[in-house]
Image 1 (tube, rainbow, N blue to C red):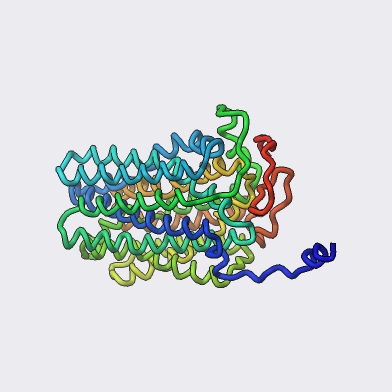
Image 2: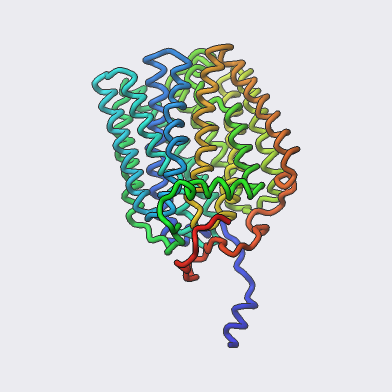
Length: 443
């Protein structure tokens, strides 16, 4: 009893930048994420370059985003429910293996000079894999680290992603330039994506609460019901959806690189990596200084900064000024990414995580991929410069509207500390035994 009293009065340990790395599971997860992230970034950059070189059509660049996004939108709800019903670790192994197979198909297509529509079929297949991979990856992370190390893990995840987003495009651009081919890059992506599958096999996540009652149509939408009730989560993901939908310029980078900034494939790789450089720098800062307060205003102002950067990028004709603007946009965007991911995961019960992250995945895909389609469509109509400028203006308008309509988000101070206790709240501490009799009813 004396020992119990002593432990209950103990001062909690001070948060450290390396908290997540003390967990064996996270070290394997991070290694796999770095490998798979490099593979996907190289694949995505090479697809953009290949389609632009073969088509010279802005709308075709936009169709890449549409081909990726539509499968995710169609499959996200059933995928999220499947993730809640079955072993998330095994699903992660299968999905990363699926990415490797897609990269292999693209390599064959590029090597033999197959028609462009076959490349779009492969891109659509990658979208099908993404529908399952995104929900699995995000909902598995809370099973690998305890709650007091979760925000640190999210921050490091963001940093790892940005490292891949920097190195992947630059390496892809260099390989394309020096080999004068794209199929070699796709082959490299095969092995890197498979590396995440190998790392996933090594994971030993804690036993989690599974959804019960089997696969039903109504249960598929339990995640959407939860988000509708959690106004702060709803506001955060709506903000990301609409801001990036209007303000993203990634799909148009090949046009800006060749026609406006007058550079080559290496320059495209630098432009595509610039946002990740800024995001990586801010992720390092957040890992050392983990407190994000006040969270709501920080989220809103970071999106405002993103919109301003997009407007200036559209105006710029200087390569290095454009690179600097993309770096700043990546830095402010990463603040919103960390805040949103922590909110979504910590305010969601364990048995709903797959379905909630599936809904979040739809929003992310709509903003990134459909945003690329929107940018390509508008660029084909009024030109790439005005497409980016008007998109940035739209981002500012959306941010102001959401801030006015959702005061709960505007007034949000803390992230994890303000989570309200729920009867079926997620058990994020691996040392606590999970009851498997918990129902899958929506909170």
